Length: 278
Image 1 (cartoon, rainbow, N blue to C red):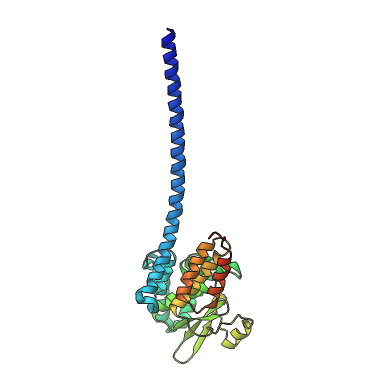
Image 2: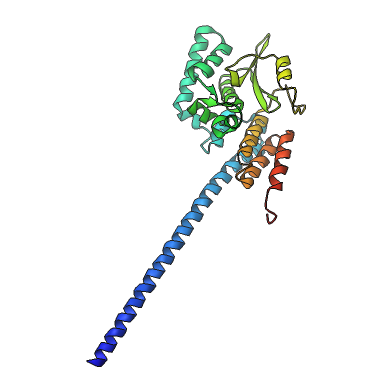
């Protein structure tokens, strides 16, 4: 009996040890699985972000830089297919409203203003950070949330103008853009943050006299330059929280609008904030 008890005890101890090892292995596997899951999640979002930036770069480097579509870029910036507007009801309903308004009034400018500030009823998001948040810069979010800064509202208006061949351009000011509608015999300035109020160029010069002026003001922005400004604004959103991501957007902004001096200034600020090890 004594020998049997010893063997049984040893067997029980061995079983307990195997159970401990099993639990330990499982804990290690769970920990490893959790780590892998977290890494994959980070890699997924990093890869998605890189894919968006690559898509933007391809549009620039494929020879389409002079014919970039505001509508396609609105979708790409939101990580959607370039034709995503086809499936957005608010956009299609807005174009239908514009078309019916033009048919009834024969006034494209007034129809555009009514679309933006009556049918879509887009309001100014407010000064400061509210005006440069993604919700105020990216036009599809503006369309959804009905609030915007000067960039988002202008981008959305330019998308309509592009769709309906309207003579509308974005005009740069120090830290601001406004819209200019060119008719056959006159031009009209539309202030995005005041529901289309028409300041004269002289009033804008007085309002923004402190600058900083770059020499790029009061001329129509090319689509790629406008998109470069949007990328610059998004980079600014990450300047305090995610320096590598801010630098990625600044590099994209630089590719689209290399003449804009603010990009180089903020790139330098961001680089100086990087750890020495990087």
